Length: 87
Image (cartoon, rainbow, N blue to C red; front, side, top):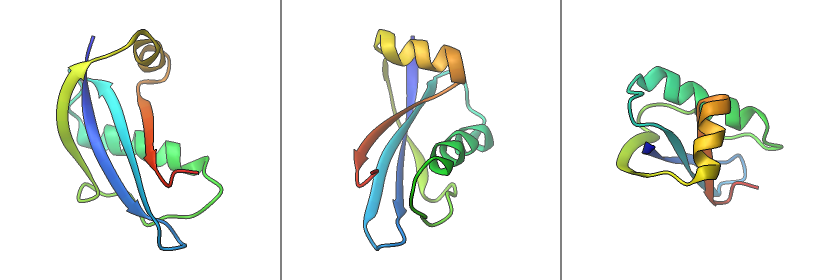
């Protein structure tokens, strides 16, 4: 499966910049749905961050997905890769 990678940067309430990627099936192009996936991910965080908008989450590239990523996308529609300051 090919996935689209959406690069996301948000400022946390403590000033740190949070960086994570939202991976979705590359056939999904509905930006509102992709942003909703990111908002859903953020609901489970123990800290607050600035609002997720299309200026903070942009399409980056397409890549081949691993089996783990494919399984998560088939189950919940997306996969998150936490890069920096996500915990």
